[in-house]
Image (cartoon, rainbow, N blue to C red; front, side, top):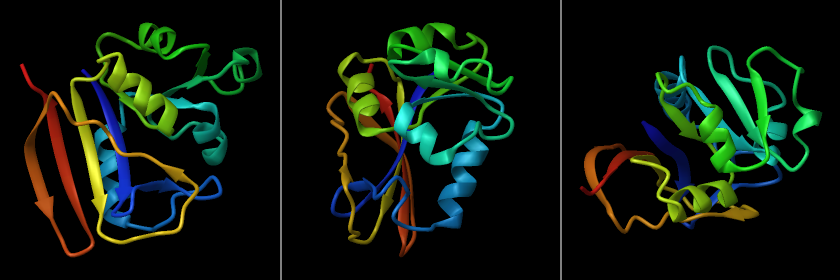
Length: 158
């Protein structure tokens, strides 16, 4: 299964100065639980903001300069396009597209994901990267609400 995984503030921001503009331990724990043992696909800026592959996951960076990332770590690969990255992923693992905004948009435009894991952060933040997914064609299948956030899962409508 290919999925998009994203957290978005109430005013539509997902990042500021290369970082996540909030700290929600429950969201980090959910991200870890969902993605561990699977494949992360992310853009160069998202990967560079983390600086290394996350433990227990294979990471594929989408970049115009894949040679700059190949061979750095055993669990790190690079691809020139989202399509190439998805082709490199193991067919027995789930693939999580983990940012940034351009990759999220492309994945939805290409209908490359069957599921969206969305964290709605219930606050306005200052940011420099905005993103709002186009949920047309998706159906909400699960929601957990708290005062600080909501975890929402959407599946592509069949």
